[in-house]
Length: 91
Image (cartoon, rainbow, N blue to C red; front, side, top):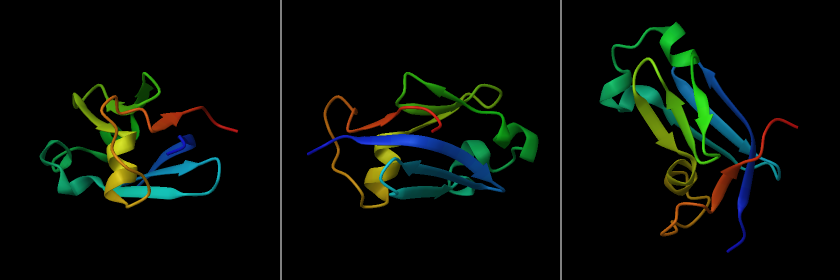
């Protein structure tokens, strides 16, 4: 299976979005995760990409793996090294 390269990650309200260079888009409603249920909008908007594989919220100490997100959206398979989906930066 070929890698998926994510070039954009953003939050719209309570929804985390990631889009690949070829247009596949995965999303999560962050409210489904316990660590986000009581988070403010400012806390949810304050994230960073860690190791080109995960979205991390330092103030909440929560992270979401990009491969898991694309897998849950039926866009890729899971790999043992969790590197089928990698962040390559905004284009």
